[in-house]
Image (cartoon, rainbow, N blue to C red; front, side, top):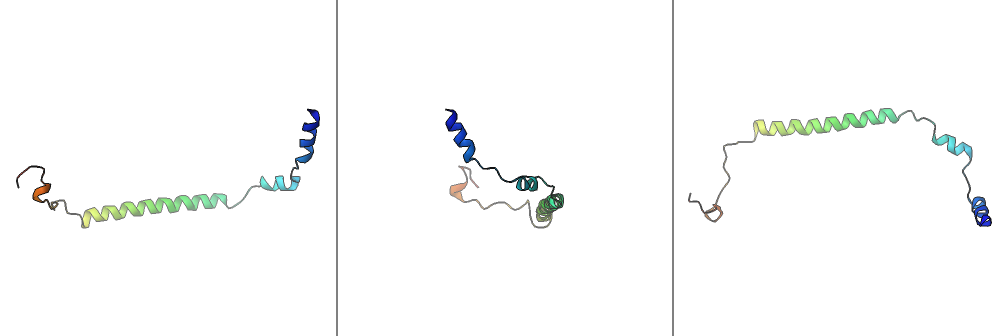
Length: 78
């Protein structure tokens, strides 16, 4: 059984230490990208809310009743 473990260890190749250390180096622009992403998200959500409120203020009329036909009146007479 030891011969199998020894042969597996010989087959596994690790990357050079330069590659590993390069992966853990800090990246400078990550924070700026996160802040910009959050700002764009907040702007889009706020814009959608503003557009919806403008629709309800200027366009939507709560006094308009939907068109109801006789067959769609649920047994009630109009």
